[in-house]
Image: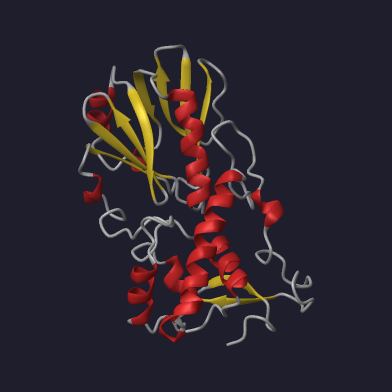
Length: 274
């Protein structure tokens, strides 16, 4: 599933490509992707301009000129592409936004898990998932006081806590493994066992890693691509994720892979001791 850096990369690309574009019409080939009534969804966006595209956690927020926002969750395989009108859209294109400038904004989704929900701008938090979402992993929002209080009252293992979007927005499997390795914290440590110093180190690593991953246009592990159809580059900078059987960059111990909360988890057994 695309994590925050990947979704932010898509957002920036889409803003460059379609901000200011006006929708001429919409075709929906897989109605379940639309959480609204499909006919109403299409009618309300006819002749509307995409003013900008924002992001909250892993959700894209398309802001339209008539005071509506389309909340788009890519889930595991969702992608947006912009192509000239009439170009072959491929068999996995399920929604086409025909633009008035003879281009098409395509939504492709191999697994059809992605969802779009149209709401009045300002009411995004009524959408499931956004209603309880935690702070963004940036210094201004993810404060040490917040993390200390949140971790201190949880006996949950630290990795699934990092994956809990109601605690911190946008962290997924890859960046949880990476930031725990960087912080030398075992993924199965109870959250309330971390010291203040360990939490401070983890917090800074989360903030730094997310910023670096965004700068690297996200991580391509399976099929992620940017809005320009390009693969992300940050997979070339991963330290532990996907590197089971390889030596740890710091100490040379062989990286192990285990299951934690049903998720494949990579760690160094020497430096990340339980």
